Structures are given as C-alpha cells and as structure tokens.
Amino acid sequence: MKKLSLITETFTESVIREMTRICDAVKGYNLSQGFPDFPAEEIIKKAAINAITKDYNQYPVTFGEPNLRLAIADKFLWYNGVKINPDTDITVTCGATEAMIATLKAVINPGDEVIIFEPFYENYGPDAILSGAKPRYVTLYSPDWHYNPKELRSAFNSKTKAIIINTPNNPTGKVFSKQELQEIAELCMRWDCLAITDEIYEHIIYDGAKHISIAALPGMRNRSITINSISKTYSVTGWRVGWAIASTDITSRIRKVHDFLTVGAPTPFQEAAAFALRLPKSYYEKLQKRYVDSRKFLYDLLLETGFGPCFPKGAYYIIAEIESLKRKLKVRDDFSFSRKLIELTRVATVPGSSFYADKRKGRNQVRFCFCKCKDTLLKVSKGLRKLKKL
Ligand code: GLN
Image (spheres, rainbow, N blue to C red):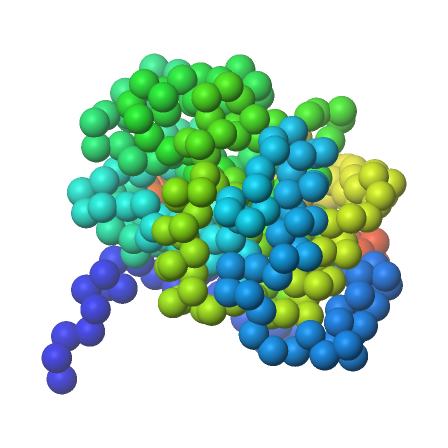
C-alpha cells in the first residue's frame, strides 16, 4: 500500500478527547474535556426545538444564516466595541475549531510562520501544521503566565504571518491585559502580520477583569480575525456553531475554505444561537457567578489534596503542579500520573504535556476543568481526598 499522508504522521490524536474516552470507560468524573455537565438554559433549548419544528432543517446559507450574522454583529458591537458588516465580515462555522483551521487555511502560504503562546490549547499545533505553517512558540511563565517581551519580540521576523492569541486563555486562565495586547498589536503592525484571536471564553472572566478584543485596538480592525462560538458561553458544546470575524477581504477567503470543508453549521442551531446572542446581560452575570463558585471549590480542594494549583483569572481550567504527588503515587510523568489518578479516584484530568510542543515542560502539570455541577464536584472531592490517606 502507498504511504499515507506524511503530514498526519507529525501529530498525535487529541489527548483531551482520549482522556474523555478513558474516563467514560470507567464511568469516571470528567474534569479533562472542557464541557459542562449541567443542562443548558431551557429557553435556549426551546429555541432550537422551535427552529426544528418550524422547519429550519435544510442547508443554511453556507457562510451563516442572516439572522445569526446580524446577532453576531450586534453583540460584537456591544460587548467587544467593534462595528462590523454582517453581510461581508462574518463566516459561521462548525464550532471555533473549524473557524481556526479554516482561517489558517485561508491565510497561510508554505514557509509562513505562526507564533503560538505555550502552553496552548492542543488544537493550535496541528492546525498550524495542517495549514502548512511553521509554529514558533513563545513561553508563558507560571504562576501568573506572563511572557517575556524580549522573547516575544524575537519570535517575530519577516516570515511571521500570524500570531494566535487565546484570551481568556485555555489552559492557563490568563487574561491578556490591554498593555500586552497593545504590545502584540504594535508587533503585528511592524511585521505586517495578523492576529488570530480565539475569544471563546470571553464571558468567563473573574474578579472584575475586563475582556479586551485585540480587534478593538487602533489599527487592528483589519489585521485581526476574531474567533468565537456559542459552545462555552451558552453551555452547548455539542451544537457546533462558531464563527470568524475578519475584514471583507480575509472573510471572502475564509468563506471559500469553509464552504468546501463543511458547507455549513447546523441550521436549527444557528437559529437558536441567534436567540442566545440576544439574551440580556443578566444571563452572563449568572454564568460568571456559577463559575466563580466552582473555581473556588476546585482550587481549595486541589490545595488541600496536595496539588499546586494556579489560580485562573478567566476560562474554566486550573493548571496544577504535581511534583510531590508524583512521588507519593510513585509515577514518573504526567501521563502515568493521570492514569493512576483515574484508577485511584475516578477523576480524569489532562496530562500537562499535551499543552506544550516541548513535552518535557508539562511533565509536572495536569489540567482540571471546573465547568461541572455541584454534585460532580462533590464526588470529585470525595475521590481526591483519598490521596490524603496514601
Ligand atoms: N476546549 C475544550 C478543552 O480544552 C475541548 C474542546 C474540544 O474537545 N473540542 O477541553
């Protein structure tokens, strides 16, 4: 048989999704994959059911139903402060996942470099490779996950096509400050490159911090591609409705890639998404309140049971150091630690190395998510407390 695609030999399966399979097999508590285990809001579910009943059941407009694009544009103005044209500047995709790969496919040429902050959400590495770009990593240093401005500056060069930003950040919980985004924006302008910004956790942000879109900064409107989705904000990760906002020029390229990749995101869920995006501000306050409580619960629990958690400022993940627990459990790396942890406590995590290109950097870390209901978190606490008795 002829050799299969060489490109697919250069990356592995998603560890996050693999951990979910392992967790399901032992009926464990899934603190690995970031999806809520509590029900979505009744009114949002009703909106999807109504759309199906009203026969929104055929292909959508390939780049997004007009009703949804209008709702996206309205919300981007009130929450992010950027005015866009819903007819020309939005592509609705199958989740933020497709928005990211379609964007990269639309802008990358062979030999282009893409800057990625490390640790990073594990899709970005393979996304860059699949689109033919060479990833260049810039370290975020714990516990506050700052970058070194000198290192950032030296990552840019004439081959740099884009930088990927994810704020609030998965897996670190970092929220990029205005000053940091301004610094990145200046580098993008100096080196004539794009900011591809994944803002899927924009409403999951704590302690009065403010979400800032780099697209709102002077000179960045046409240099930014802002990616988002309904998955995390409205707790419907299985609906697969996301989007990319970009200048008309870039959007026309993204739309072509998207059309041939997937044709469109599910029509009835696009209608429900349009409804959700028009919910009042009180919806987002309620969401934040829920996550403030579960963040505190999990953070305290991890401290108590021997982990070294980093307190997140946004998103719904906690990275925790496992150095001393590794010794206690007599395991050598993050993978064997995660396997042993499921075995002992039925709690599933993501091994830290999945978030690094240089796998050694994540050997002493695991990632937990806390987007789970009180009952699950209580069961998790029972499980993790077993570690104290070892
Ligand atoms: N963003 C989620 C996580 O990091 C998972 C997304 C996915 O699996 N598609 O866990």
